[in-house]
Image 1 (cartoon, one colour):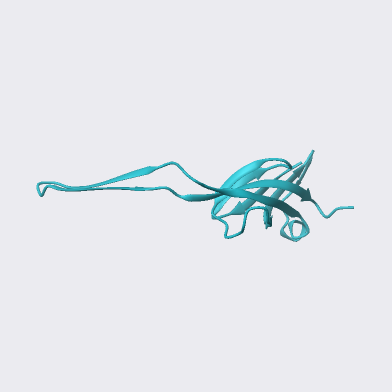
Image 2 (image 1 turned 135 degrees about the horizontal axis):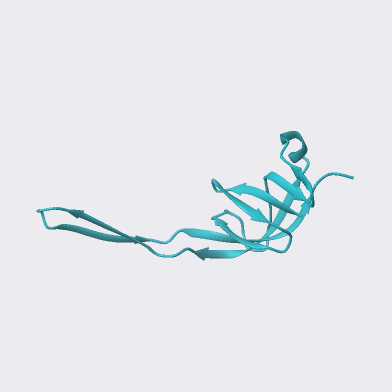
Length: 105
């Protein structure tokens, strides 16, 4: 069983036990988080209906905060001698998926 969850404007394929790196969540390490599912695959059953997905709960545990890779930005204007170099590292959260419950009986 796996699910497609959406967080931080991106979609991730997760299964129980997976560790996924997502955009920064303002939660302390060790706390639990609920991620909204947009698709659920259980063997041959694929659930995409919004009312059925409302009963689906994908839970996870925050492992910690990390930084993404360094992105280098170089601004340049021709014939003026203007060069500007800056960098950026995005803050990310690592989440371990602890459970996917479909709500079916």
